[in-house]
Amino acid sequence: MEQLFLNGILVGLLISLISLSVYPVICLVRFFHFAHAVVIAAGAYFSFLLSRCFGWPMGIAIPLAILLSAGLGCLMEVAVYKPLRKREAKPIVFILASLGLYTVLQNVISLVFGDDTKSIRTGPVREGLNFLGARITPIQIITIVTAIVVVVGLLLFMKYTRLGKAMRTVANDANLARVVGIDSDRVIMWAFAIGSGLAGLAGILMALDTDMTPTMGMRPFMMGIVAMIIGGKDSIIGIVLGALLLAFAQQYGAYYLGSEWQDAIAFAILLIFLLFRPQGFLGKKV
Amino acid sequence: MDYLIHILILIGIYVMLSSSLNLVAGYTGMLSIAHAAFYGVGAYTVALMSLNLHTPFLVNLVCAIIICGIFGAVVGIPSLRIKDDYFIIAAFAFQIIAFSVMNNWVSFTKGPMGLPGIPQPNLFGWKISSYPDFLLLTVIMCVVCLLICWRITHSPYGRVLQAIREDETFALSLGKNVAGYKISVFVLGAMLTALPGALYTTYISYIDPSSFTVDESIFIISIMIIGGAGRLWGPVLGAVVLVMLPELLRFVGMPNSIAANMRQIFYGGALVVCMLWRPQGLVGKADVLRK
Image (cartoon, rainbow over all chains, first blue to last red; front, side, top):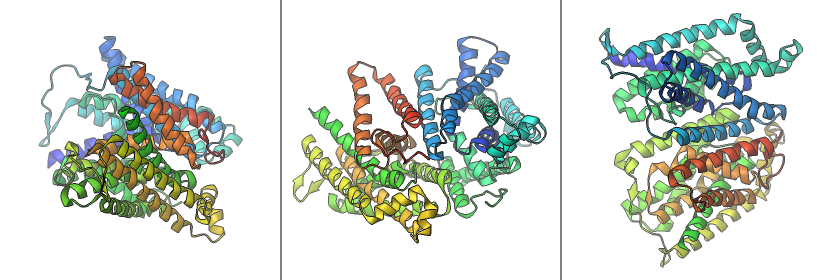
């Protein structure tokens, strides 16, 4: 039972990390950026490329992979979303374009690296450390610490920095932001850079824990979206609580029903929220 | 020759799938990522009935239509409460849950092992078994499906659907029962997927959950969008182009392992390019996806 609780915390924080990586983007562009799922996988594959194919040390490979993921996010914004925004396309057009981007990029990864599982782990698999009657691996500890740092960091960033305030302004009202001299395109670009960088980081952490496949991003991304909806998509605390609720429901559901039903449980919770409380439990009523 | 007929039958299946989606998404403006799930519900209904109950094809087909309609109502009701991208996520959720049930309820659907040996259809003593027989059945079903779509879209009912797509509040202000229209067209779209579902099941005579994934839903959406949403002939053209073109990759001698990925890249790329430069698709009306 301790293990179940610990897994709940771990998965919940990982989902929070992914949910928060897409949070700046969705806040500003107001559509579900499906191609974000492929950035998660891209982060893992960039680190694989740099550390395994080029033989660079992890200390260089991981930061560079995060930067490359951020670049990939910006590239999508410049090449596709920005022209669509200039044309004032309908939300549905953005979503279709992002589904298309997802399909293309995911298959590019499969084409280049193959569909089989790749690993960036070094050394043999060690038995986890004992922690209050549950087992935890060093990489899981790193994941938990990183996720907490990101949550706190993003909270402070959105509240106190100039860029964070600008993001909140654009998210609130893009026209009004322009009136006070905020360049909304530049702010959105930053949101893509920060969000995609965090997604790359999440992908690398996942790969260090459980290796990588080209489709590894979609499932956690959808969980992140579910967490965002059930938590209320305008509040960082809400998102973290939503992610933890989701993770515990999944872990305990898997314990009683079998692990193959995890996805069904998550999306059943989502449907319940969409039907009865679409603004999430901390969201404001629209 | 058999290969050519096989491609034609596939085109027919996708014409029906994307035409039924066109009613929901192209004409009414509700983009549903759950279409492959309805397709799967129809296919599994026919397969399970013919394997377990040994009922004739026509009975199975009617049951599949009814069951797809019921599921359509179950998913369509959320569309009353939520709009736009939230509706997309809700449909997505149904798609994931449906796939999960097909894949995990092993005692009922045999899970990833799939259901082999589904008997070929028998219509009023006409035993459908050869490729040309199936082609004729496909053509009949396609004509029926397109006639239904044509009749719906050229009726007062269809005009209200298009009004809802253009401006929901305005349609409401004219005293139209927007919720009723939305649910009924969603149910109708789901019912129509039972036709390709039944055809696919009996034609391939084997089904497993991998034919009814999210990717399949995205493919159906691509066909509708690239062909031209909101036009009767859009999905037909889209299905011909998107099913035929990747087959050409086979003839330029591309190995199979690469061809599968290249095909997906082609679909996705076509969708992005279409959104950037021609959101109305090949023959679509200019204003369906434009502001």
